[in-house]
Image (tube, rainbow, N blue to C red; front, side):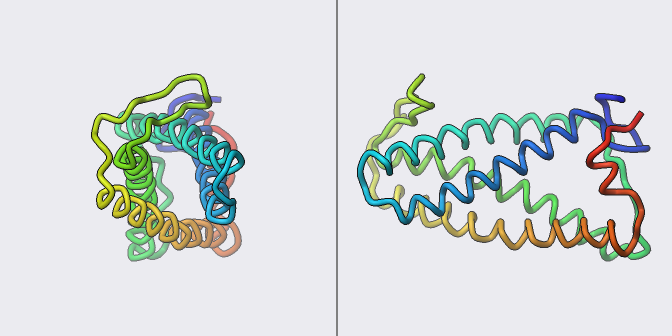
Length: 181
């Protein structure tokens, strides 16, 4: 089992970063949507702080994934359709871009609201800016739209994975579960 990617397949680091990132995106999406239903109060603050803390962890994994991808070759299974290959590359890049938008607008929204970022009640990152209501509200809107748009891209990503598993039967799913040797 190899940590590094090769042209033959993904290494254990890429696989771990992918699945941990996927779990974080799902957890953040569910928790973020749940925030809309929780009345303001201690439960809301606890849920929001958990969402923010997980978002900070998500930032670390996104940064690691981007740096790793820049340093490691991309194992590629060409399909019979170059157009579908381009769609797959676009969907993956757009997913990472939207995750980056969410990771940027989340903290900026908090800071523009005049609040510090609370990291699991262990540390706090003070706002580098004063409270700016119009910016806070705009960033919240962008954050909400990006969180909904990511659903479409995750759906396309899953459909592509299912196509590889059911139609193409090319072993791509196995390559995302079992590290290359």
